[in-house]
View 1 (cartoon, rainbow, N blue to C red):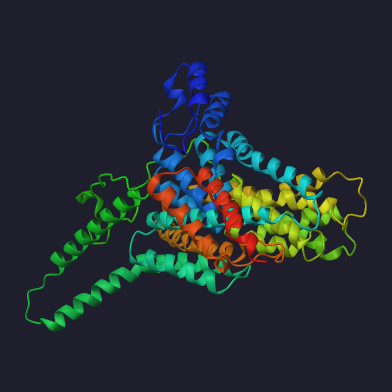
View 2: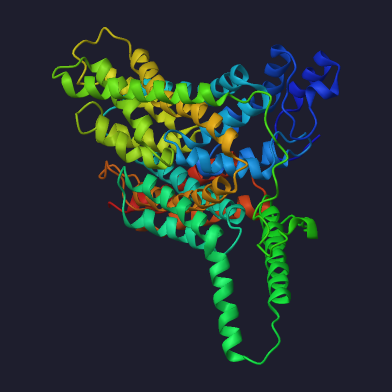
Length: 539
């Protein structure tokens, strides 16, 4: 039985084995899709994912690490996908709008077990957090204008701890995404670009630019640089014997060694300094014409039995574009739209135009629900603090906002229960990402063997990891909550929050403290700070 804190499934797995009486059905061979009966596939995904909605704390960056540990490393179980497939899916999900980690989990489950099991996984993943956020909205509706000061300290401590977790996830994702000097540049460039500017069109343009950059680099940039080095060497030693073949081979061996070291560091980063032997790169892995070996190993998943036909995928994409145009047209044409339709329309639009997942959707949702007066700034910030501390997707924040909108001052009639707004917001914000994932997954499956696609996905992947570092900064700047600041201020206003964030980072990375325990400890540290220091600040 695994002792990994991310794998908490022994009880259900035991019942599943008893039910099936067949280890091959419980755990298909490594990297092989489950093609058994629907009931068996449902039990398979249930045994591997039932707890994620309750234990996946920390937001999308941490979620990606959890999914990698569970479905690629697969401690104690057969892996569903390999490293190459994971990295490609990560790039595809980042390049599409909607909740990033939700799309990642949905795609992994669909490749392994099919569409219906993937929908079950989505429900298991999102339902616990959405119920918690709706329940929280019922409590906030009955709150007074001002909360007790210890509550603000508790929420600030939770935010500081989550900043530490996201920073740790960013470092771990970067170690996996970096395969050469170009991807190093793109990770740093993505982080810096995200810090300097923020707009709806900005992040998609950066992702496309990164993909084209790695495509150009792999197509002719590396060879041009190698030729330039050889020309300089020839000018310095014109009488020397032409050593081009040996030099090229040496450079290939040097790059292979660098890749081995990088992959070794990547595997070490999956736990608190666990050391594993690197994979051996043989001569067969080296291209005969002297090109560098592929930055990632060749995928061991040729094609899933549950792959969506390319024709179906194209039809799905066209249907989505049509629906999106219809919603935009209605949004522009109707002057006095009902509140429920406006709520669904806004959430559907947010789920369509947001790239980068939860950290990016927050400012847009604020514009959609706070500016029109649907939700007060204080209530928005309270929900933001709580969703950061809950497991599951950050897009569950829309459930809270939908309920608060229907129950708020903008509602013309109080006869509509707030759960209607919660359901409309849930469907509206999650539908675009899942809809497009179904369509584009078929396109990716059809094109994934093309080296141009692999090169572009490598650049998208590296730049998207850089955006995770941006998310650390964004949350840091609004994470400190006080009664006087309803919009949130920088955690840097109090050094204690840096202590909490740093302690969370080191506790999880070096001492394998479970993420939920680290988050709770951060909240308790916030309350302790208020008792010792915070309550005296206003006196």
